[in-house]
Length: 426
Image (cartoon, rainbow, N blue to C red; front, side):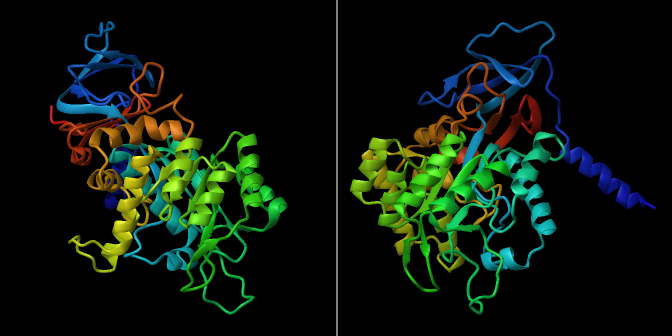
């Protein structure tokens, strides 16, 4: 029998999970300004018309359809929904629980429940799409979470799922056990061209939108990172994924690993710490997108005792040089922080780190909207304030094209024409 307290909690949960307003026939949004996701800068006095779950019109003067609902957003900048480029919804901050313990000791049900909560937190922070690059031992649970969100069972962003990710046999973890003892792994192991291709196809069959491989890693405790897959294995993986219409992501942070991933044709390079000027030029020439993940490095160094003072730790300085080199070579940049290493809902850390390292606020805004959408091949659906695209929008206090810190001040979130957050204070 339910107690009153239980009923209250159940009703509250339903209200939290439900959109504040369902998509209607027409909604006219009137913010102070609009950032369209493409044009450098914002447009003062522009309006956005929503019809159903789509953007219908954008501009300074929009004829209002009969019966349309008008929503004023005074003082706010309306932007396309932010796109998180590198997330792990099934992980939580490493200063709470180390990665090994999350993979080995946390039940799948617990990890899934936490991922549901973290998906909602991510959406409320204005991130209406996330590329989730591996469940790290939670199997294909990201596909189930994606389905639950798409069916409206729980709130959350659109998910581009990578499922288990693929690693070379023996090159991943957890490690440190008696040789020969079967230990749950944080990704799917494969060796040789045929096995790698089968692993790619297994993950696609299970629901992967993006195929992720680890091009390098540390083979043993305390060892430096080294290449794991051969160029032939990586090329075969990319071909199998692209043949199936999937994008590819390569974890690569050594010079050789990055080089092989670029030559193999990966769509994105994740981390990229040791990318030389020559490799930066090669990425630019081939259109390879770099996702530098500055925020994860920053977070890990803080867990180790760094208080943010200068001089920064060597790892942080390496990431700053990496971004500077990418900007100099005109490499296309993804905005993705490796969220999960640090708390979900604080996704803005990556954008702010990129600005602090020398990228302009407006370029970061373009990169985390239309830029990420193009990199992930979803620019026909989201990423810009353009008629026909999904009505995935976020409004923030201030102008983030001038001061990137404004993206922390989220006041309004719409996903698919449904208002899921509204504290604009009208």
